[in-house]
Image (cartoon, rainbow, N blue to C red; front, top):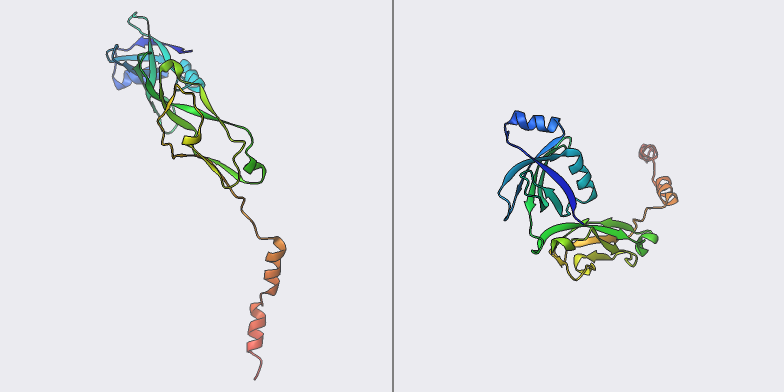
Length: 212
């Protein structure tokens, strides 16, 4: 189910005007596509933040400001302030629901890996998967069962189970996760014994000063 967002017209494009938009809780944006000429707009910051938290790669029904109704769009690019992560600008790409699109989907890991239970260290290397499918077939996430992964084993993109309607675009040999063997530490008693066996510098010097 697509998410909804309302767009408002934007005519003023000076730096001061754009700054004032952000102060007033608006995010400058642009929407473009085959059926939509490039149009500068604004969207409500709170609504956009809520949408991004829920599903940043979902299809959005964007209500156009010219009264032409809603257009299916996807977020193509987001610009943020590198310091405070404030939303600065968003690009919306108008899509056709009967044409496949490329996007990314979150990997959701389930189960307790055998290797982790045995003391191994689980390292997840990939959190999102690049896919291609029809817009209405984009899943909220892809479940990855890691229950049978043991120590020293890993999982590749090619081993993931995805619906038949989805084409995986990520490298099939890309590492998804691995379980490293636990690191062995030297017992404290061995370390202590090593310290006791080492001759002190004072003892060595005293021996050298003894007359022959």
